[in-house]
Image 1 (tube, rainbow, N blue to C red):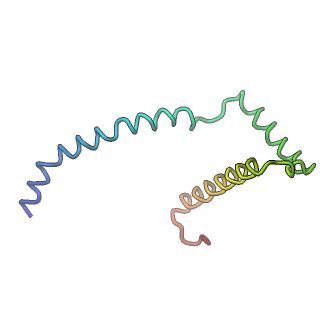
Image 2: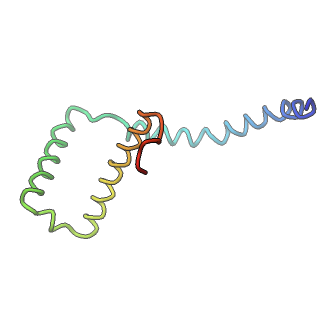
Image 3: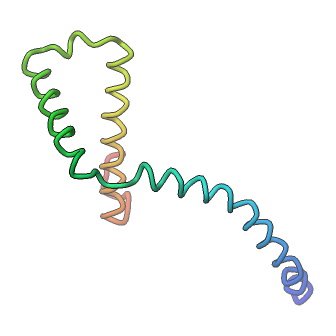
Length: 103
């Protein structure tokens, strides 16, 4: 056991150094995209979002959603699925467990 601890203590700085070297460029990329993509909407973007929701409601009322191409319909379905899954992930995190959900 003592040999294992000594061996680990000798190799630990090299392992930490390798982990830091590996992680720095990946974390820089993550923070770059996080600053751009994970910001809340600005006050100027809120009217555009409201207009988009009104357009979706109007499309549902008039039935113009039937005129979508297959590609647009698939993309809309994927976006809806993503929103739905993030909702459930938030519910699971808030509940602190997956028990009790029909998954």
